[in-house]
Image (cartoon, rainbow, N blue to C red; front, side):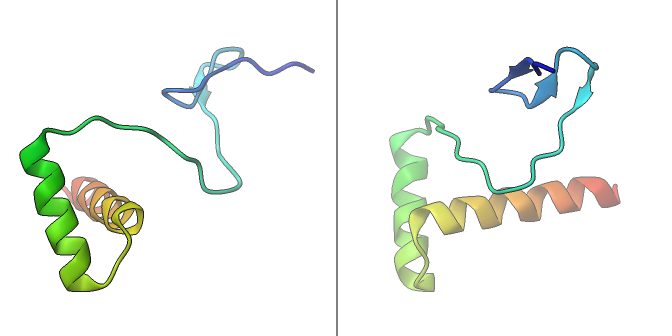
Length: 68
C-alpha cells in the first residue's frame, strides 16, 4: 500500500487523518532576526542546542493549548 502524505502537515491524504509518526521528525522554519537572537541567547544561557530549545518551546506551547 502506498501512503501519500503531505510532508509539511503530516496529514495522510488517503485516509484524511493525522499520520502518527513513530520517531522524531525534522522541520525547517523561518523566523525574524530578532527572534533568532533571542533564541540563541536563551539557548546559551540554558545550555541547550538551538534545536532542542525550539522543540521544547513548541511542545510547551502546544501542551498549554491542549489544556485550554
